[in-house]
Image 1 (cartoon, rainbow, N blue to C red):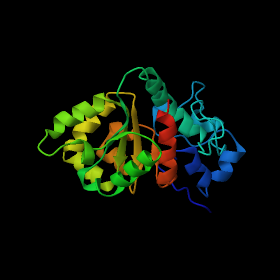
Image 2 (image 1 turned 180 degrees about the vertical axis):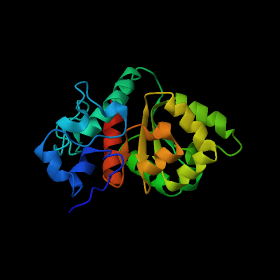
Image 3 (image 1 turned 135 degrees about the vertical axis):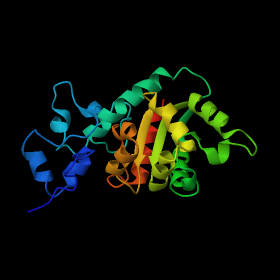
Length: 228
């Protein structure tokens, strides 16, 4: 008998449930579905992901006609509040599109890769490697970057989990981002279960996962999210 790949807390995304050998047939057969951990993923009718778990794609209102970027209904539901904040902040001048929160150890690896893919798509990214000058106060520059960015993304890696456990710079950025509705967690080479162990508050937020969606697709979704 096929085993569920997320037996404890359910699947974080519709695509994850659809690809699970135990849950994919169930998700097509009835509306019960598998819900994400985050309360924000529940619909007003109380059915959570049940209305869309079998649907492979959905089109958010901010995605332009002809776009090849594919979204699940769960993606759209999770990203819609962030997009609403982007639109509300559209009149503010000189904002970066994205503030990239990451562990220092990832600055030349996964964080750099995500930064480069976003900038290749025309997204302006606040990134400590290029935006903090030698001798400048890192905390002060982080504060400025957060204020002057439309969206904050948190790249959650094994190194990031170690940093927040030790209350490093990443924890300072995370605390500020958690106080807003502009936060998109991106889990990379770790799991949401590990994230919940290190930071239950961040782990309760729905987000994106490179195990279910390649980093190129995630970058494309973020680029459409912040496009005005």
